[in-house]
Length: 162
Image (cartoon, rainbow, N blue to C red; front, side):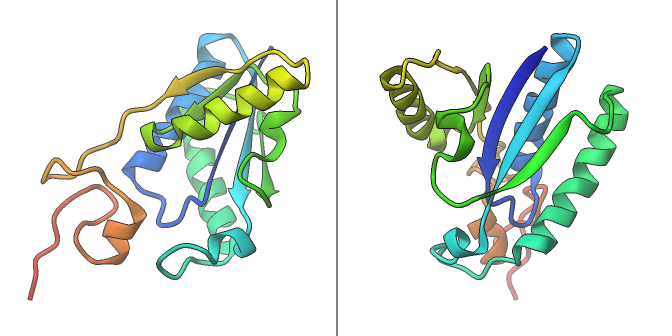
């Protein structure tokens, strides 16, 4: 049974987040089952963002709703994942019993640091699965900041300027 870990703020759950989550649950599907552990950034950590972020409970509810649909799509059991509060940049990935970590290109250095810490603790390295950026219509990566600034919507469609 494979165990996957990933983390993030998951603010304005957008197409890029969707691909990260599809990859994580896809690993379970490929391997005949397992478990996904999602670290969701705490309100305290999210406060350092350069824009306002919805509170933890709201982000968790939106994430659960999205995952519920994904589990149906992948025919996976409802109890194959857990969301926990992420209070530091590495969370349980540095010490937990996991096989894979799913990251975006911008968070590869964090995954490398996690593996460095795991090696130092005598734990096996995690297999790093990098999910490419999802590009908006203008070929610039979709990001929560761009959505917040009104440049694009959650699917990467350019927003008309008034």
